[in-house]
Length: 173
Image 1 (cartoon, rainbow, N blue to C red):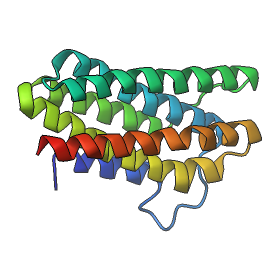
Image 2: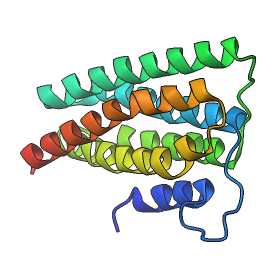
Image 3: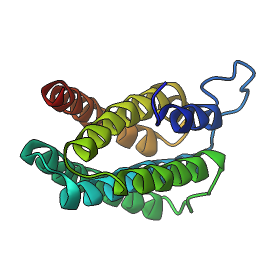
């Protein structure tokens, strides 16, 4: 079990992905808060990595994460404003935010190659978790067609991010 596993497991529990008794999924307002929280966590980690990364490929990846996830957040915020939906904080969005803060604190204490490896390892795990949440919770529970369409539209970017992070991870070993 790596250092991010407890955070990932708590996020999965909050999403209800590890609980077979999970009856009702999040509503659209809660999904909006989860999407914004998930993207903000990766933006913040990316900004830290832009400053601290030793490897040029890791820095470039971090810059891309900041740009791409900022773009997704802009789209999500514009959509919820259009739909007159106020994002509703929930256990999952709070767990993501707290987990992101804990990860940033841990990463901030690292430098050089140790930072690069920890950041990229976290990005792999994080994108796997987000994709799982998209597939099993967020997309299936989105009741608004436009919200569901946005989630489906951005999913391939998360897959691409995961594959890119895995490639960098293999290069850093």
